[in-house]
Image (cartoon, rainbow, N blue to C red; front, side, top):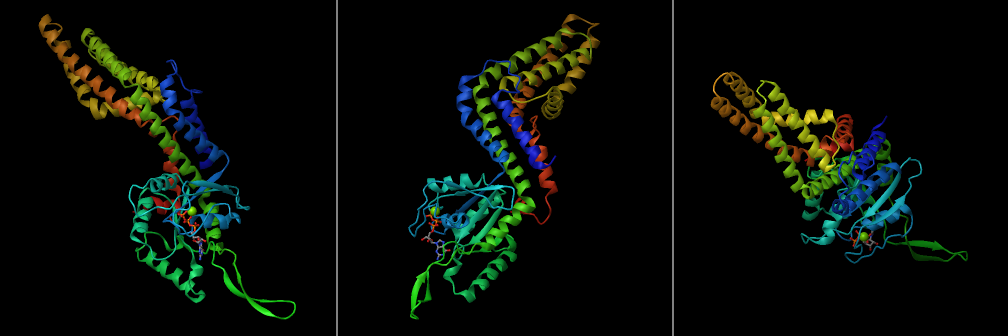
Length: 429
Ligand SMILES: Nc1nc2c(ncn2[C@@H]2O[C@H](COP(=O)(O)OP(=O)(O)OP(=O)(O)O)[C@@H](O)[C@H]2O)c(=O)[nH]1
Ligand SMILES: [Mg+2]
């Protein structure tokens, strides 16, 4: 099974958990929780649809008026998106489907509003949030790279996004200079003055200016007329097709999984917030059970065993309270990890105190009680700590959920060829 198929199953699985299809709810559905996680569940569904339909999302990004909308229009061959010389023509993200023909995938171009020099501008944040969910970003520039552009580029690369630098409006330069400009840009990349690889820089003219051409009429007269040349985007088309062929599936799988994890994280966080009080009660209840059992069972090791079982039961109870996916096996693994990090002390001390309790059981009641009480304190403290840490782990449930998304992500990253865009995006900055 390839990565894309495995990613699909993993996301289906995840969605199943959160929509209650394959989730062992033993609590009535929490209406409030359902309401506040509705959007995140929809986002998860959207990710699944995207992967089911093989939709590869390409986002255009850049400063205002660089030609972002024009690039998409040039691909689809129609003036679908408004473009114009004024800054801020695009106010909202818009999406346009394009089928590249030969490739098996569909491309969804998403146009974003131009980022502005003003920090905190709402359209800028909108553009960033769209870009961060892209499978590939076309960073459109049309001239010297400004400080704002450089910073924005670094910010996207820091979030491990695959980026192509698209130098648009190349027609504004005399034809003989055009290839020199492209070479210069690539050289800057080689010198690391642009944080990209030379091969990820493409020069195009999405909507070239009209040029004067000589038109010969049937009567032999020759007139100069303005004619709009076709877009010059072949280099970009080729580059995108190359990426799609070489690593399109891996990119699609990787980004879908990362996006699904993001939605899962938000759902987990909201669930934890809402169930906080109940979880708190649960933790204390289990801490009490455990202390009682540990204090009353005079048999050494049996008390420890009962204590461990109580912790395991607590972890399972917390998981099912939150409705997060957890199997018994994962519960044990989690308990082991947690008790090593927080409860190592309690287990060790419980053992020695248990031993003490056993030795003193032949002595006076007060000695036995003293040792047992100490053991109870450690037991309930350990239980409390384990419960608390389980909450934190559960919040990050995505990393060890039954769908195994992290394992697939790790595989995709480790199997990405050194020359791939995936590998570059992961290792740069
Ligand atoms: N000469 C030339 N002009 C272009 C090219 N591509 C776009 N333009 C012009 O640049 C201007 C801005 O283009 P848009 O596509 O609206 O730019 P944008 O980046 O989407 O702008 P905002 O939505 O405002 O952020 C328009 O007047 C286009 O005609 C090109 O390749 N060559
Ligand atoms: Mg635009």
